[in-house]
Amino acid sequence: MIDLHCHILPGLDDGAQNLEEAVEMAGIAERDGIEKIVATPHFFRNNFVYEGLGIIEEKCRELSRALEAKNIKVEILGGAEVHISHNLIVEIRKNRSYLVLNRSSYMFVEFPSDHVFSGIKELFFELMSEGIMPIIAHPERNSVFVRNPSFLYELVRMGALTQANSGSFSGIYGREAEEAVFSFLELNLIHFIGSDGHNARSLAPRLSEAVERAGMVIGEDRARALVKDNPRAVLEDKEIPYLPKPVNSDEIQKKIKIKIPFLK
Ligand SMILES: [Fe+2]
Image 1: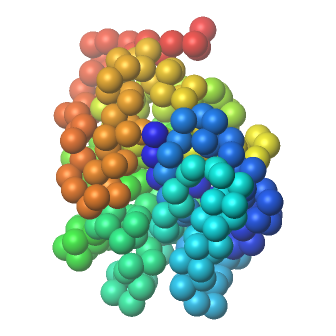
Image 2: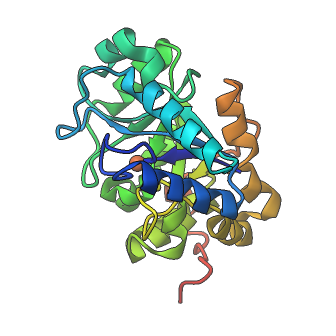
């Protein structure tokens, strides 16, 4: 499996505290069946400011050397989780290679948990015009998308992609996010599952359990595509192979009741 979203680089954000914890996280990932991790430190959140973006590559190399020394076979690749901001396009033009995932055309976009920036459709359109494919990070943790899945549907219809957190499938972010992630999955609004791992304890980089749970809704093959085929295409900068037709919740709400396993 490939974990596209992980705060494994030490000392950059609220992820791994030090190199030892980063190595421990990689060990957990390896045992879970993860072969590649894209390191995605937060960018443009007010409290995380870096002097030079080249530090991401330096930290990736440092961690890769430490993993080699411990014989942990997990490849570390560079990326970022980019907080939405009005001057994003300017930043993209300046620092594109650091903001995208593994120097591809794909970029994680993070929203605050309680609102979605009002000019989002225009911004996504501008990003796409710059050749950037936005991936919305963990929409199930954003109350606007949770309350209004048809808004997420509209963004996906525009061409945006989404990544769900593995922990959402087992309820670690609460019931609301858990219900939302299964609903989004049924509505064909999820394209990747990533760990969003932050440490070696409660938010460790694991994907297998989430894939198993997702498989009970969309079938094993499709669930595996969310952690294998689709993320591989991102790393190779190709179109993702599993791109199901999104469903607008507003159109089906009156006709069927979405059934979510594990929730009674
Ligand atoms: Fe994250």
